Length: 335
Ligand code: KG4
Ligand code: ZN
Image 1: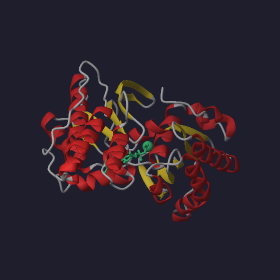
Image 2: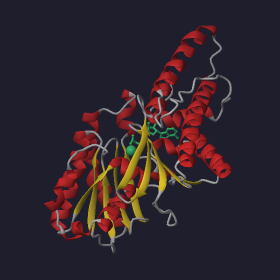
Image 3: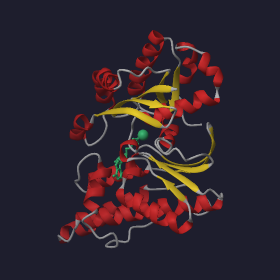
Image 4: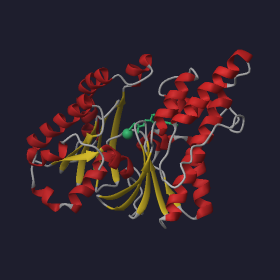
């Protein structure tokens, strides 16, 4: 079964054709970075307008790349995300599904980030541990089976990506902050400054607002002395985040006897995080599944993949057409 996926929850307009949940036939992402960069953050009104301008071209790019391929369903992100942005995708998906008399499937964006780990990894089967580290979320879940998840913990304040973005802003680095810190950190010493780690013992929760405050305090204390090294601060900050995220996640995997881990979301593109996960995973005999860089940040292949498994495990949906499954398009939160 081939599914056309559509993703418009935040600042990437994306479409993809995916076969049987795992094989990406083509994926196209139109970034809005240039639109939001002057504001150092995503401006919701501008984001929904930009989606409206780009959605047709992105879908056409995918379909024109595979003119011989027909598709059996349309998948679209139903939330969480910016409402105006989600509506652009939802309306587009419903129109395509209606015209073609095929089902439309609503997908939870966070669930999508986990399925990014399944895309192109044919061997990966549940159960496994899932870590979502994105700009809006940091969640640790047990992926027991398709559609069956247990949430172990989440951030109590900022998401990991949000911390990267806010700290980058304070350091005067460009938007989005995560890739900018990744680049700056490559030239710095990760042990230059010992930023605090929030372990929150007895829980699988995370907290990243304390470290953000420490970076600001460190900057205020040292900047007038003229001794500030942005690469050192970036590397030390990144090291503290990576330390907590990797240590807690692998501890959870061991605690629940899970030998496979999927890491999804934009922060999964971080080079230091990827390296430490792979190294520590080897030591603990836990297999780490990291999506290809193109599928860490928002994309539509992960949405089409999640939709394939929804249809496969809920055959009733296969027989329904277009708006018949509109209940799925409710803009609801991760359950
Ligand atoms: O998953 P995503 O594209 O969107 C959300 O669902 O939020 O994640 C975007 C987040 C941003 O906070 C961005 O700064 C972060 O992912 N990010 C990174 C890297 N690339 C993107 N953070 C650290 N290192 C990176 N290389
Ligand atoms: Zn995302």
